[in-house]
Amino acid sequence: MSGEIYFSNNYRDMCEQHGTGAGFQFEFNCSRCQDTWRSAFQPYASGRMAGWVDRAVSGAWGALGRAGSEASQAIGGMVGANWGPAKDSAFQKAIGDATSHFNRCARCTSYVCGRCWNASQGLCLGCAPDTAAEVAAAQQRGLNDVASQRGYDVGGAQGQSFNVDQPRQLVCPQCRTETHGARFCPGCGHQLAQQDRCTSCQTELPTGAAFCPDCGTRR
Image (cartoon, rainbow, N blue to C red):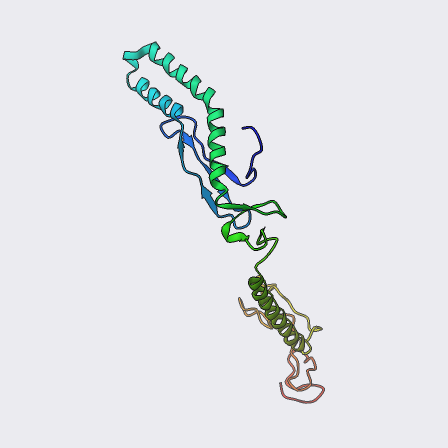
């Protein structure tokens, strides 16, 4: 292909050189949303003819013999010789058709579809976002940020009463079940490292104690 190539990084070559389905087709995609547009299929007559000849030679090999094989090779050579110019022409036509479906952003030079184009600014929505959409998105971000901060503050208040000095076993030493800081293993019931505390003064209770040694509260 010669000359300047448009859509150089956002098209897919779907062309087929040989066979009865030989032809040219290209798929272009929007650089912003990745939606695609496919050009109209342009048949490649030489490639289709080669496919028909190959099928005829394969079906009647005994009758055509070497002559049929030579004819197939000759047509195959013609297919290869014509492929490059024919594909270049088909690609240029596909690009011409694609320009009515895509816009080139003057700022970032990306090709975008009509839904991703800010016509009033002559720029893509990535470079010139829609104002109403940006306001709505900013409002949602503000809501999320404030709600998250309030949730953080609630968690912080709860954390003030959380005993960070109390030992905890996060995995049961008996059955290896995750305990999530529980007093007893949820898998086997094994008593874990936490010591009992008085319900009144939070003093650690000795093993087997019936009353708190500090305030006398019954266990």
